[in-house]
Length: 133
Length: 134
Image 1: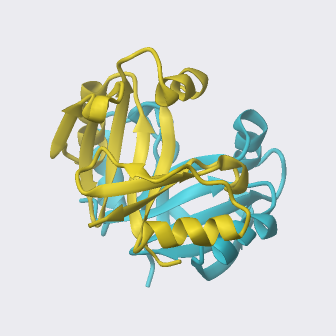
Image 2: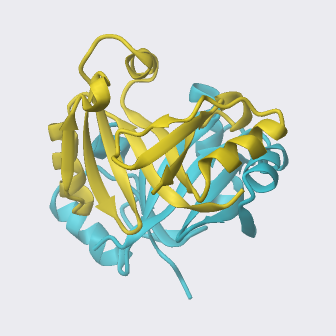
């Protein structure tokens, strides 16, 4: 079961520069900053209603977000939906032969997460997340 | 300016019905409203509610207009986000005061709502519209 849009991920070249618009001009509150080495990103999480905007700056050009920037430039990167049970959700997707990036949930910025393959959703990269308290 | 929430996420698709079937299949989202060329716009649209927001699937029909031109360039995928503000005119004044270029406010295809678009050069390549609901 999907509860809400947890966040929208946006790929940027320079986190500090992007905050000038999203934080300073739009007025969104930055509630967390984080770096996830194994995903190769430095991120700022901004609150928008009951969802978040996740600004993502790659730590290296060969990380997934780095490759996205190289190929497509800055912009909308993925959408993440919150579910109470990412393990059950992933099992269900496997049962339905939905193309996946992750075969098992892993720890990400939003909790325990997994990514689906964009061909499952007509070119949209979808993430599922169960926040960890 | 006061931002209330992420109102909706606009997703460009080749075929609204096929895309809606996929969203139902992978995450169980359902269409609650669809429209064919609302307000004379050259596209079909379907709304899939999720929490306080919705996904808006948009399929070009007419081979002209702003959406069609961008769709030709970018193809299927996440297209734009719509951010709800309390007061659209105040938000436009605020942003223009910071030298950010905005489109003129116009009626949204969603009844009772108005929107204005922020020029993408200020938003790290993200197409963002501000929407006010009455």
